[in-house]
Amino acid sequence: MGRARDERALLADVIEAAGPEHPTLCEGWDSYDLLAHVVTRERVPKAGPGLMVPRLHGMTERAEKATRAAHSFPELLTIFRSGPPRWQPTRIGPIDNATNLVEFYIHGEDVRRAPKGVPENAAGALAARELTPELRETLWATARRFARVAYRRVPGGVVLERTDGPATESPGASRVVARKGEPAVVLSGPAAELLLYGYGRRAGAQVEISGEQDLVAALSEARLGL
Image 1: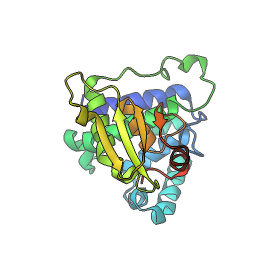
Image 2 (image 1 turned 90 degrees about the vertical axis):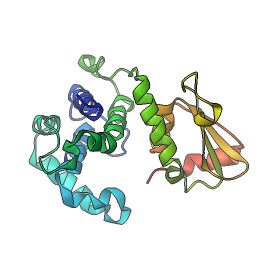
Image 3 (image 1 turned 60 degrees about the vertical axis):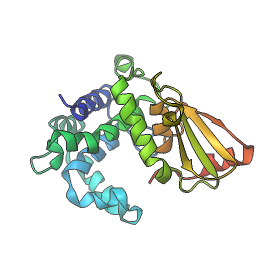
């Protein structure tokens, strides 16, 4: 199995274990909504532009609601597990990894880390993950690449410092300036946590934030991500 395929299977398992009404870190969404989102994302072409352009998001939202209304929770799970449709370029392994690996990882954490009471039969599936070194490196590479976009609305400097890098990694490789400015706020944590924070999952990301009080407050109020 390719890495994105592995993440697809894990995400499906987590959503199935949680059940359709489980909350997520995506505001206003339960796990059924999240499942409708990932299915719509790869099967409804007209929903695509709204994923990248905020003013077109209404089109995507309507498509996601239509997907949910048209399919039961078990049906959507089956569709999602079956993989991309034939016309999708993501049927090709490298494209699938580039497009879906991080997406599916983040959404799995959206379910795992949501404030909730974990169903007794789902405790194992929703437990914190032990990440492979390969996945940690992929998540850090994405966090670095996305950093300037993620923090562009923050009024002040932002620096990310990774705390779980390989022992052989140079100090510079574990640090990235997400937004230039002095003084700067410093976010420290494992690669996965820095990625989640940058993608707007503040409530679930476990990072340490240091800096002047007003800058830390400004960071906490700024809209992150796309």
